[in-house]
Length: 338
Ligand SMILES: *[C@@H]1O[C@H](CO)[C@@H](O)[C@H](O)[C@H]1NC(C)=O
Ligand SMILES: *[C@@H]1O[C@H](CO)[C@@H](O)[C@H](O)[C@H]1NC(C)=O
Ligand SMILES: *[C@@H]1O[C@H](CO)[C@@H](O)[C@H](O)[C@H]1NC(C)=O
Ligand SMILES: *[C@@H]1O[C@H](CO)[C@@H](O)[C@H](O)[C@H]1NC(C)=O
Image 1 (cartoon, helix red, strand yellow):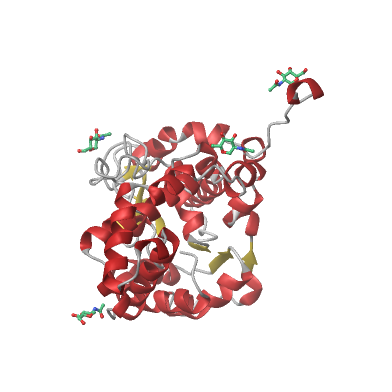
Image 2 (tube, helix red, strand yellow):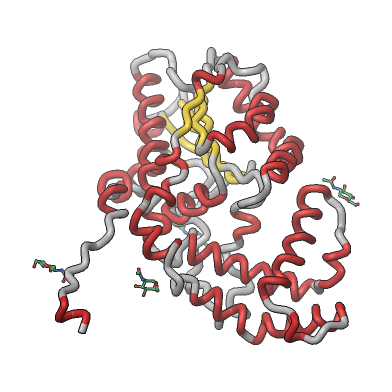
């Protein structure tokens, strides 16, 4: 989530009990296997925020020092470097029209009326943006400090669901399935992950030491959501729209669960000693927010690495950031503009 740096820092501290069970043993095991930890950080500021906690997680403390830390904005903040995304989505006043329509729709109007009633204000003195600020204030304090702020008493559970949908709509159209470019812009990150996995597999096959047993890349929810969409996770049959709130009650696309505070996605590559065939020798698991994530192609939580690469072959081979992100050169002539 975009949030004040101190919020992110506290959220990561709060993740310690949440993440410890699954992530720490993995990192410790890798560290014991002679790991040097490679760090890639989306931004310098995010590195400074997260670094103390990274050391907490990666204990025994990684040997890597600041010099090993690489800031790679194009890789982890790809959305800012993708011209087409910036023009079509980020800076396009009409790209979020579903979000704007929902703000003016009947569900939001009822929330505004209820909140105005609780505050003894005329409803026309409130708008969706103000109500959203109050709701975020409530949710920040709950999520980060585990205290129920007085702001929360303004909202019923139904109000919270409507405001959750408003936020999901925004994530859907800006970072998720709403526009193809949202997810296509992450394909260099996707390919980079598989390149690193391939490299580890090749080193393992030739009995070499694994040069980077653990790679940590730290970015934002805005980094993770497009990547998950590129891989096809949490896709509903029907798009999220301003007018289908009720039909989307059971939707998969819930950004509060997909990218909560301190969201994290882990790829774990296994070498299986007792594989029957060479294809079964390398297998992979994914964890999203410390939970095993069932794969799209099988619904199982363990996949043959080769099967996964087959499933994503098209993205691995044919998605090119430069081409995806290139703005169509318009041929507008004087005649077109008349
Ligand atoms: C802005 O978004 C709308 C809705 O998706 C689209 O029709 C339009 O072409 C976009 N404009 C630009 C300049 O990309
Ligand atoms: C949050 O607060 C509630 C009640 O105040 C308590 O039962 C719960 O254990 C707390 N959760 C955490 C993670 O501290
Ligand atoms: C995975 O499970 C869902 C829900 O049970 C089902 O609709 C889908 O077809 C399954 N996909 C595969 C590839 O088995
Ligand atoms: C732009 O012009 C080129 C060459 O005249 C043409 O091949 C192409 O189809 C045109 N593109 C559009 C979007 O009109």
